[in-house]
Image (cartoon, rainbow, N blue to C red; front, side, top):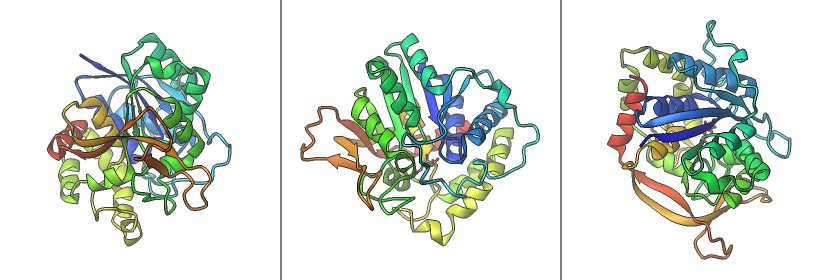
Length: 319
Ligand code: RIB
């Protein structure tokens, strides 16, 4: 049975890895890619997404422009230089596809329209701030009842931050959107948190082997990820890591969970919400183990995966 996906991305380097992983999976059909603000400005994210599709010979996949700022309209946190100013390592790409290839329809309308066309069949994978998803459920409150599943890379499970002391970037970039999504999406929801991605990172030696594949996709990934690989191994970045140095491809964990039924080896079900007010904790994901929130809907928090299965999905992405 083909898995029908919509990817909502803020194409930076790990979003590119996630898109390429999904494209390489024979059991996956990507019905559309919706873009949101996040790792860089929306214009760059749209261009980066088209660049990834071009290197994969999949410019047939529709790309929809989403929102370029959080719900409250004040972009407080930007991803800085981690992904490079342009989001893909600042590598010149004179043959990049033009934005005329974008769809007229906006991301929010696209999510509603595609999910409504295939009720119960489509899974939504979000690897950036959740602005588009929040607006989609506000425009169509029945959306979650028509979704097969929701997979999110974002949030934190032990208050660890990578942008503020307690804030993971995707949730912090639009905390109100994250709050609305975790409150309104009552479909099966799986979350790959920051700490989970750190604890399931790969050795840098695997990254070297992965990029050494003799393929155009590997050469593309090697070039766009050089900047990020350098930053990820600096002392400053090591402080953010929860489990020591490692090759953390954040967004690919959400895609891998969506496309591979035998990936997850340990998870837990818990009700969650997002802190909106805390001076130090705004954007932090709150896990309610003692049922004070009286939330019926519980999400699946990823804990452990089969690393060898995950590695193979990554290798396939660059073949
Ligand atoms: O915190 C990690 C997340 O922030 C990833 O989605 C990465 O692409 C950045 O957007």
